[in-house]
Image (cartoon, rainbow, N blue to C red; front, side):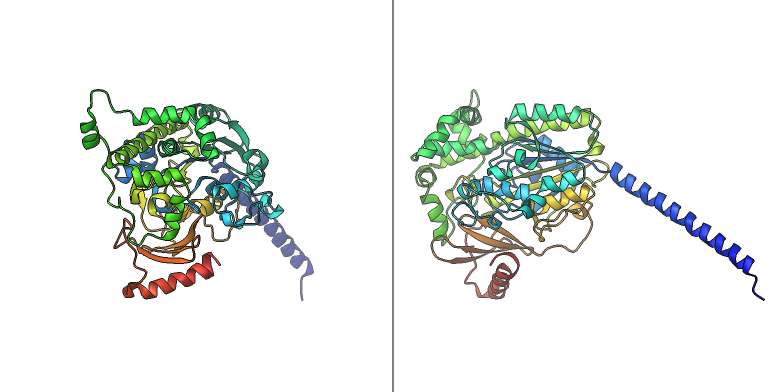
Length: 483
């Protein structure tokens, strides 16, 4: 005969056990969430202007000293195959804020945004973009937001419009001092800070002031008192050194790819010819002029490195190294005499390949050099920072969190990466091929091979050995990255 009282008692025991396990589970979940929240770091993104990937002593450049950047590399990870979404200032910065390609947006004339003027004329952004900016995501994670330094953004995407605390309009020494003061403060919430430094961008004025023919160029020069003074200091020949000795022993040598590329695309010539100061530099700069340009570029990079040291000292001296994720990158590089060019906006490595490093002491294994994975600072930064903030951040679905790569994990990763410019677009692949499609003077295709020709002195478009690679990347260009 069934004993109903015994069954009831057993059911009570089972109920109490289930309740106990549920409480324990909730407590463990709360503890897990609390632990995850406690581990969320302060995040500082140091974003500099016009720095190529090879412009650091930790990258093997013996013509400058960058101890601050070397410290980040030594204590974290450096990527050698990182690219900007677009190698010019404003479009790259639109990507920083939105996690999207600049061409996602239209300017006031309904053209794809691919150059500075169009980027600054984005009239507004959709509600979807507003909900998925880097600021919008981090607000949901209860991060405080700080931005200091260069903006170069349309009104709808300025730091103030997105909800950042804009703590400094300076782009140099005053900026890093104010950032250091914030770092030293006690913070109730974790914070995300962008420190947007201008240098080594001052190198732009060397060629510009020799042939400033447009009204806009004249305005730039008139406003550039600090920039020109900084440039002149960087160009100064050391005391007691003759010109002969200076050019022979102090200046970096001319690059291997000093001459224009064989069969240089019409689009590149068009880019140069449209700005008289760039055309003047290519046609009239002497070998000594180009060496001097490279010397000044290196000195301006050292100026920037000293400014970053102020930030590192503040983090270390305030005991925040184990609570701060530092990410360093650049909006684009400088041609620095390669192909007899200065400035940016090209798809060559000097312009499009940028530095990308990260350190978080005690969390990111130190001394890593990743020479394999293709990184996009414009697409990948947003999901990466959101990942560390404990939330999912998505804007362009092709962006990826870099956290597993920071940890040195061997994960499945993208095999190709898209890059835009005002003269065309390209796809880079993990095997060293670059497929370019220029479009400013008719359609021009090029296939480059960085393994056989790392300095891009020629192209392999018609080389039958790589016909399948050309066809493969042409298809990927159209189906995965661009229409």
